[in-house]
Image (cartoon, rainbow, N blue to C red; front, side):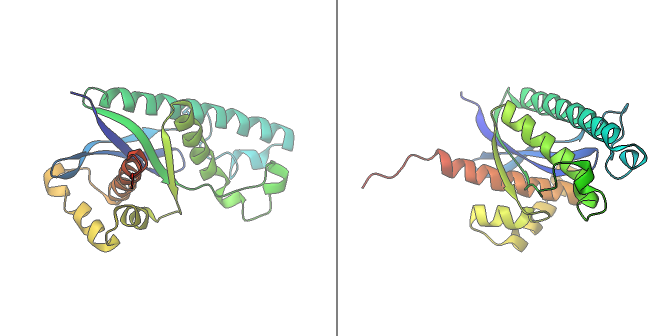
Length: 206
């Protein structure tokens, strides 16, 4: 029996992420995995733009940020590879959904003293997920920050409030942990799964 397609949704933080994976069964979408991914290298700063790089000259700061970015990207790749492997017995992880990119200037010098400084560290983790997903050949779906439920509702042609309540109600069946980040990640995963299904459907022949 072929593995069922699955999709994951991620809620990103500076240093870690909550990821929930879902697949579709006869009675609707079902959560098949939930986990926390530790994306920050414990030997390196988790928020170099906002802290350590401020105490270095520009060249040293840029070098540190490159080192952090490389390490985070590798940890993200390993974590998603492990997730896909853990699901492989019953499900084929085919897509991941997470928030869209918020562009920041390319250099530390251009970021310092601007509002971009306050989001630059979070973009390290978002960019790392993008790199990892691309390397693993998964499809990416994205949405505006904190709009997981709107993304899912639009993808599924349903009401966002009803969907949010439905997801919250799963706590009784799933047990802890089932918190706000898990709700949002599950919504993102459901939206990705719906869009994945729509993309994979063959065109209608008149």
